[in-house]
Length: 284
Image (cartoon, rainbow, N blue to C red; front, side):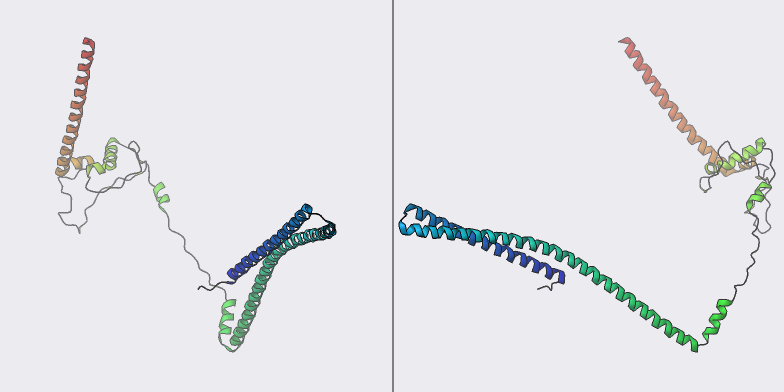
């Protein structure tokens, strides 16, 4: 069997009390109905065979019946009052229980506060007594009164904004335009290598830029350097002198021409079919 909590026990007692009260009321009503039936039967018997002796008994019985009916009415009124009082008492009991629970919770909260304050006071007093005898008191007081040292921060270095605006503007010649287009389309020219996409569109070009020359470092080997035959003043001329780029561009152009031819053949075929259909319709 499981152990019951206080709330579960209270609920059980309330259910038992309600059931007992209902049984008592039912028994009382049954007894009152039985008494009424008995008096009704007696009246029927006297009405059937009336005599002189019975008339006296009839008068007595009528008097007793009146008394019994008054008692029943009084008892019923008492029961109604009793039920009404019990309903009120149940409501009041529920309100009282809630009020008592609130008071109990407030008392517990106040007790916890008092305990916390008492413990904090005791701890503070113990700490003060320990600090009076310790050497740390002087060190703590000196740190509290001391001022933190000043720190002089150096000036920040120049950003790229000033350096960018110092670049002079140059005229964009057709040779420079060609080089810019090659740089923008470098993904298509060398697909094996990854290049970041430029912020400029196809028709836009930067206004401020530098044009310089690449110098060979003395530490590089001869194989890493660009040969003299491939060296040229512009990027376009340099690419035209490169053999690998020529082969790649030729193969790429062949692929493009094949696609164009296949598309043209498909279009011509569609046009022929359409013309044939039109001729057939005219003949009909």
